[in-house]
Length: 253
Image (cartoon, rainbow, N blue to C red; front, side):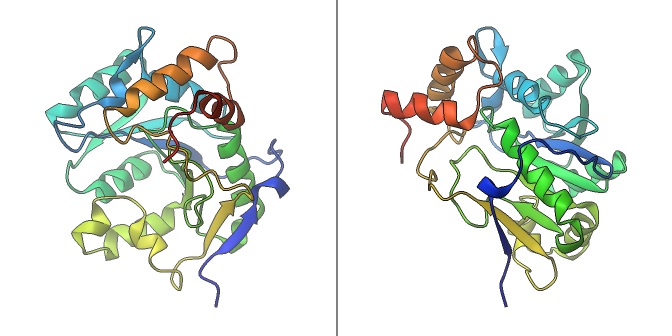
């Protein structure tokens, strides 16, 4: 029995003509430690990286809004202040139980479908999210969870996860291990017999490219990409980023 269905991104249309069920993007934005504190709040040209991410997510079609989910830790006060200043939907919850925090954020907006994006992905391609949404909507009767992470062919920093609220709810009530609650979806992806899983892949393996804010040193790379591409094309794509970093000879693991 297959653990998950696979979908070739090349066969998924870019523009989704279908409206979705109540669906919002929830940005997972918490710092975890003082060493990692607010790396996504580092500024490029006078704006925090989180602002660039939110701007890019607004290009995504057929969502009802964006929510920033962060913790109640003082480390994340800067994130909360940013959301308030820019009139963004936000939710603050448990610092340690990330799964519970994310569930409560989704519940507070009465969502049926959630798109999870990490705040450490300021270069995320909106068209990639569009394609994932189209795929999920087209195969909704077959899927509880869809991502591009079960079969790694996309760069780090391009992770997209879409799942039903009901799957998230089951994870909250049944996940007992600390490791399953430190993140949002491990319980779901670890139980392919319980949840109907799907993954999007591309034929060209770009998983060696590192385009995420995993560590503080990644800020300089992200800064270079934004300074080069954003003034010319604010909605720059993954292909644009790959061309730039390939030409500059950086960020390949």
